[in-house]
Image (cartoon, rainbow, N blue to C red):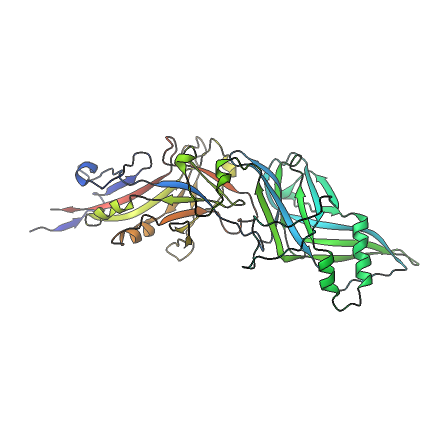
Length: 440
């Protein structure tokens, strides 16, 4: 009579599914298993495919402005501009006989984010919008949106960036433009539609940089207390009295436009969200980039082979290891956290994977501080793999996507270059730890 015993400690079955050694075709149990006294075996019949995909990036309502230029070693130049609509002050006052105009300035507070060379001066330019910012039909604005503006800036500012110090940036606006705002508010102060007329006349601003001079992209906080226009004046009387009034920058229509400076780069030629750039067409690499919308896609085209293992054991741990290319990137450039989720045939994103507690599944970054040869992001895919194995026929068109946290998307140029399975050194891989049920 036959009976089944599970050797859960000494008789473990380690399955390692590698990138480079994988072969196409069905799983041949006789050929693929190398039996030893401990019932361990190495199976390499399932491949993992990395690709780069692209999606539009929502950049409105992020509470962060991104301004500057960064020269990425792979993607080339990336430039970021930020757009603001202007609101009329709710209680504007002006004494036409005694009030003296001093200045009108835009104030921006850094949020500590910086990418690029902070040892070189940055050069910012403030332009007046000539087109009203209008939301898309879904109520959002994206990195690809843009609105026209006057070519001649109404303010410029050169400074050495110290983002960690959070020194506020103050840009003085052209005096004639500033006085035109005061004149308009005085003229229409009693008009019932003064607010809408003001916003129609003064559509807002764009803050950009000179890409020939600036070598860094910087982040700034967007709120009523951290980004605004401030009018300075004084009144003449028995004593000089300093005055100031604040103009709000609308948060609902604020967004960042993020563009590539090098359209000839293969990754930047991805324009359709349904497209994939396989690692084989990109020197064995795949790219993640938050501002331009690049994401990693992971597919297991021969995952159906694992169905033959269901009657012979159980996957107790599945670990996906994504290895960054540290010949290109520095360790301190690596994103601290990555997210992973389901994606389908035409790069239709279904949602994030969850951990055992129901929270979004995140990566664990392992750093090799000495040689960098064993630096990788690890995802625990045990639940995911076992759930896929419950399907009678596994749909190989269903894959995984990897991205950075949503809080950084649309307001940073965070990026990651990873090694695919065709790379000979430090390749990404999937490790399956498998308990084999011995049959007597």
